[in-house]
Image 1 (cartoon, rainbow, N blue to C red):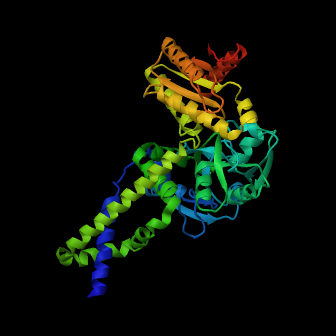
Image 2 (cartoon, rainbow, N blue to C red):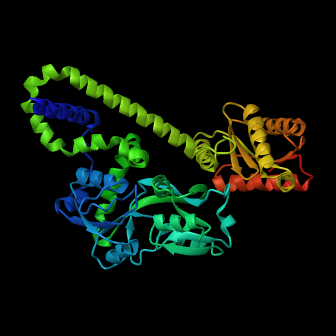
Image 3 (spheres, rainbow, N blue to C red):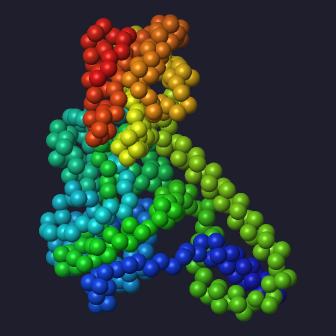
Length: 480
């Protein structure tokens, strides 16, 4: 009797999960040529390497991870067969593609050197390349700050080609994978490691290495699938499926592997139960007439699941906050500022809105660290952060741009308004009594959005204005 009740509990819990996570059926409108290609029942061979959380290959022939989720959606909605071919290294994946041993590489950047002709799909998910350092490094604002340093990158990875092409002054140390690179970093054998944001977050979280993410590069890894030219019709098929995917679908995949993966042991019971889902569905109907006496237990199981869901959301919220916050000042960090700038640029271009930015730098800050030590310098940075946070509008976004530089993004403001705000902040800082040193000033570079601006162009103008303010004697404002 106890065994029957245990089986019934498992079936009830699994049935609840099936109902909760069931997805609707999609029908993609393929052209006649695309449907003709699909009807020929091609089998696309693909290969990947261990690249958690994007790719899990240790359980061959089972393939899972973020990439696997997108491949499964394509296979289901287009009826395309996918054959997973195992590879030991990324170079082996590329060699197999060049030798026609596989037809598809599921995660590529247009900047990758494949070694043969490849047809790229549209981007289906994007992540920045970030800079990992040891914990004694404060913050890295720009990639060129790694000049002359020993920097680890995965052999044949996108990060390798990006740095080799754009920053030849950096000494590159190639590694087999991210974990090997972060271990070299932890031992002090290299100065930094550049790699994929999601992979580095996962690797750091699931290891005991004393390293952290200290900045981001200007490169955004836009994941695309690469197909052999002999399967050219598949490119438009893949693109149509990507285009019809909803934001919720993308978020579900991201949350499942990036966020749950950070602490996935908490959910092992749920996944173990789901392993037997196929058998459970049949058993559910067999035991249906006995459900009435088990309603109370089913309700409790659902309550437990809701509690589990709430705990997951709390952990995800904490992770999100940590990912966009500067640890010292509590303001937004460079990653968040870049994201906000992009959103404002897109919004202004589409709806003809205006916005401006203020880039400010604490005057003679190096003297504070040299004379009074870094602890005093940290107190000054914290005080400046509080002043900026307390004397800007609720709609303004304030963050630490790097070192002693701060950036304020001001939506819906004109030149007169943003200059007035900058002057107000300048006077407040000038008159504030700081710890230990009492008096400190800042210089301000101000600019407004212009048509066809990019993050690089608007930041370049504000940086030029800041330089002019410094050249004009500091503790002043310049507009460009």
